[in-house]
Image (cartoon, rainbow, N blue to C red):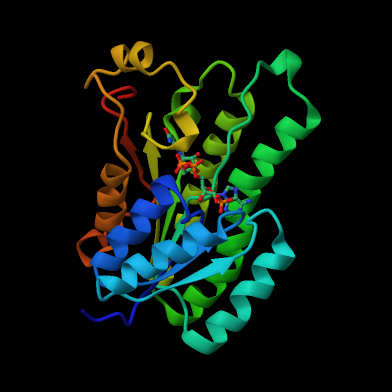
Length: 243
Ligand code: NDP
């Protein structure tokens, strides 16, 4: 397995990001597995990848902290090279009705989900531009496409990601960099464990929650050579929730 190409996955310690890191490692990428609180989980993921003959290292920073992002990534890029793939996956929810929403609930979700994308892609895309190659894939949500009551903050952040990626796709296309978005529906991870699962599954045309591996498969395609002519697109992976 050649591991010349690096893939940076933010929020790789758990859930969808973890599945994406495992899948891209299987595809032959050397993984930079970002974590924030989950150092042990990220290190255990890296051991799992290396046991399967892949290459991976855990990279700690909060995507919200632009200084920490720069300080972690700049020396790593100098030493090891420019990621070919950036998967901007780190995200949080702080659900509640707008009328009751605190400043902190609004700001923390926007700062993590949207400003986090900006902080990381600004560092990485600058280097991709020099290399004239790269793939940026952001993880949005069906909530950013269709809206969802109780998620004004989250839907705004995820719709913002779609706009940001469409604009960025146009900025960088001439340098052979593609920028796409995947927009999952309900996926079985920690993020949805408190939700009323059976009731929600009844509202999904395919009748079930998705698996993290099903998001990873789409990311793998978008990161691969065969997707080189796809840019500025939003791929819904939602069991038919939004068509
Ligand atoms: P989880 O809650 O299972 O995992 C969230 C991940 O994001 C963790 O690895 C966490 O890292 C990381 N993270 C959170 N805040 C930060 C931060 N400030 N800096 C770096 N990493 C951070 O969520 P999912 O796997 O379900 O979600 C992944 C993405 O998919 C999110 O963007 C989410 O919005 C999106 N999504 C999820 C859906 C679902 O149904 N599950 C549906 C649609 C979209 P750590 O633990 O190390 O802090």
